[in-house]
Every structure is written in structure tokens, then in C-alpha cells.
Length: 450
Image (cartoon, rainbow, N blue to C red):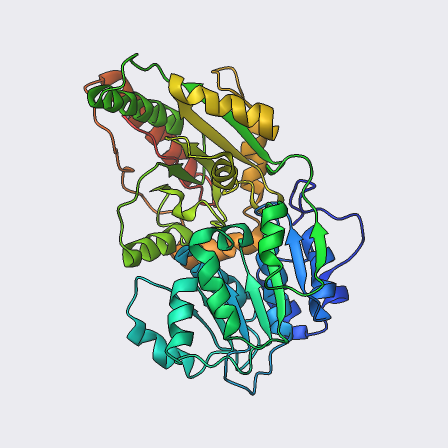
């Protein structure tokens, strides 16, 4: 099935992965995962990476950078050697877990492959048995530093170091740890660094780790994915700034959110707020449920704004604006992944309008006021085509949906005394259910609120 994708991931060359990769098991794994042709970053970065050259690569978030170093890592492994040969460092635990899933997915047909993740927040005692058989080590700097310092992890066979989200890893809170880790690794290793943004301070920091790197810079003038429509809506707010007024602003934003989720069809939605509350195990379980489509709406902080890829997310909502433009770009980049289409909508009060204007003027972000006249039909139609036959079969396997049965009424998460909204909700539900029993395909209901 041909899927409409933006030029972020389109190439003009008639090239498939068989031109870039000689290992048939990796090609088979890519095909099983739904990858038939390389994206621009994959076409440009895989060849020098396979030659053993250090690479610094820049491309927009969501254009397939993980696949690049996953292919390079898998291609250099000696599967008869069970010791660590590749080390991948990621700035957050969630990204590390996702990288492991991607690499294991495309390497599923490589018999004898051992790839494990090592992150903080979980008992270190559970890491030790995994290190006995582990060719690809993926982890956060803090945990990897401990494992190397205590000599729990051997590095003498290590051939490749990958720095994912390198801009974050080169910040002061990680930089010293990365330097400590690097000292314990072989001098003649290959280094690959990937990020959506690069500047002179970042390149200077990376110079401590790379040797004569090959630079690949693919981002255009805008750092936003082309398939993401961006809007903002001004929420009325009191002139004062006391605690009670802040609660009133949140109340107004939540009301707008409820109205939005009832208006815009979506598969999955991420709502960003400037807070955190779950421990590590709860976060991992929540992310796993979201990927299995057991969670439709995920409310989270900026911990997952970077690098996290949940394939069915086609709506991102900012309930709070982030502290900087870079974080905003990473947030909205959770949709429109790999050349698909999505919506990003921000609810702002008067104090946050300066941030919106800065996005427009300084970062050339095409963000526009949200109005009732705006139609999302094109993006909705294109988003649904992303669930191609392979993804649909995977969806059936995960949810064990063989045929549509009489479903229970979807949960109502907000209650009011508004009988008109309540009547509208049940009328919508009846229409949805009648559509289900008259069609073979399962179409998930959108969350609506009464």
C-alpha cells in the first residue's frame, strides 16, 4: 500500500535498502517493520557509517535517525562474541528503552543477537545477568558510568559508540559523565552522533569524542516537520497572577482541551504539561501501554518530548508552554513522524503570547490562531492511511480484535450538569456503534467529554 508522506522522508533516487545493506536478515527485519525505502538521512548516513567513519548527523526529529545507527550497529556485530561491541547512550530512560525496541525489531531475524537496556531508577542488580550476554548495550549516562566504574561491564571488545540526541548529551549535566565513560572505552572505536539541532558550542563539545568526522546536515530552514499543522488558542486569563487565578487559567485550559478532543478526530494524543509525577517503573509501563494502543490520551511532561516515537500519535496538545523553543519543537515532533501528518495545538494565556511571537520571528515556526472555521479533513484522511495493512495486522494481534463486538460505552472523563452535552455524547456514541456493526474494519472511537 502506498502511503502519502512528506518530503522530509522522501528521496528522489530509486533506491531501496538492498542497495545499502548486504545482510539479508537485516533487510528482512526492516521489511517486516514496514521500512522499504530509506529516508534522506538514512541514504546519506548509512554508507559512511558502514565504512567505520565517525559521523555527525543532523536531521529533523522523526525522520529515521534511530534506524541509521541501528543498521550500522547490527551490521558490525560478531554474533559469536557475547561481549559488548556497541554502546548507545541516550539522555532519557524512555528513549533508551525505545532504541532497544527498534534495534531488536529490525534485528529480529539475526540469530544469536543480544541487546539490552541499562537505565537508572531500576535495581542495578538486575543489570548484571544481562551483561553476561549482551552485544549491544543501550543506556543512560549515569547507569553506564556506574557499570563501567565498578567493572561490571567489559568494554575491551567495543567497536562503536552512538550518541543519540547529542545536543542534550553535551549539556553540562551529562558532559562530564560522557567524558568519564569515553575514557574507559577503546581509543580506536567509531563514534556516531545524531541530533535535530547543531550549533558551534555543540560541535566544539563533540570534538572531544570524534576524529575527522563526516558531517551530514539535512535540516532545512525550519526545524518543524512539514506534515505538522500548528495552531494556538488564546485562553482568557485574569490580570493578576496569584495562585487562585492560576487555577482558573488551568480550569479554562482543561475546558478547551475537552472541547478540542470532542471536535478533532485522532488515533492517539499526547498532552504536555510542565510537571512530573510517576516513578520510573510507572513511566515505562505507561509508555508500553501507549505503544500497544491501550492508552488513547497520554498526559506527560517533557521527559518524553525528545525522541519518543508512538506511531499512532496524530495530535499533540500543549497545555503549558515549555521553557524554550527547542523543547517546543521536540514536543510537536511527537506527531508527523516519518513523513506522516499531524496536528499540534497550544492553549496559551496572555503571558505566554510572547513565546508564540518568538517562535514565529526567531524560529520561523508556522503557527496560526485556531478558529472554528479551520478544517482538519486533509490531515485526518492522510493520517488514517498510515494504518496500512501491516500496521493493521499488528493492531489486530496486539488488541486481539477479530471482529467488532458490542462495545461498552466509552468512558466519560469529565462530568458537568450540561444535559445538552450529555445528550450529544450518547448520540455520538450511537452513531459510532452503528458504523462499527456495518463495517468490517475496526475504527477506534475518539474520546468525547460530556
